[in-house]
Amino acid sequence: MGKTYARIDGRLREFIEAQHLFFTATAPLSGDGTVNLSPKGLSGSFAVLDEQTVAYLDFAGSNAETVAHLRENGRITLMWCAFDGPPNIVRVHGRGEPVFRDDPRWPELMTHFPAIDPAPHGPRAIIVVTAELVRDTCGYAVPFMTYDEDRPLHRSRFERETDQSLDAYFHKKEHIGQSLDGLPGLPLPLPPLPTSS
Image (cartoon, rainbow, N blue to C red; front, side, top):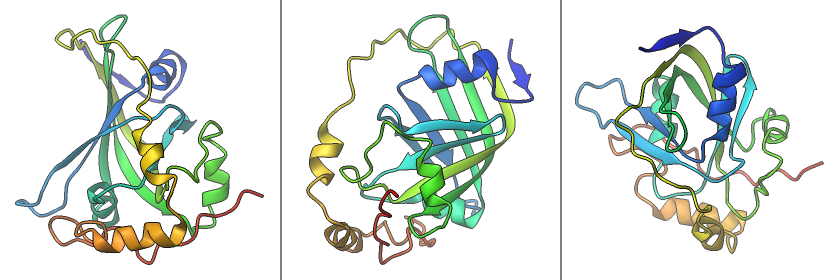
């Protein structure tokens, strides 16, 4: 029932880009380390860069497990489910890298997210994923659910932060600078958000 794809294009790309929610899964190398699974949303914060590469914005939050795991070993799986229309589940297994604010690639990568004004959301990294295995499965047991709208809470929480206050917020959080398992997380101090040219 499942199919393997050589590239992210055509109907597969259309399906991925049409979803309002996806999930990321990462884990440390340690066999008893904490596996992390995170939902990701906010319209416009995900992009297909080319047939083998996708990226999404990693926004301000209270931990940095994905960043820590990617810095240690790079392994990541992204998953999308069809909550309306024909049933479908798509997984991209690959290697991910967090690109931080002070990376020279940041300005060009941000051009792939034209619908996102970065200032109100405090993006701290752009996660770039190179696909190694792309598969779909049936999704017959995934329920129908409707999308109403993005929640406004992330913006309303972080739009009042400056780069300095956001850095202070991250320093106060136990699992930003390091993961639950003590791996290096988000590098601090937080570099200023680059201004668009």
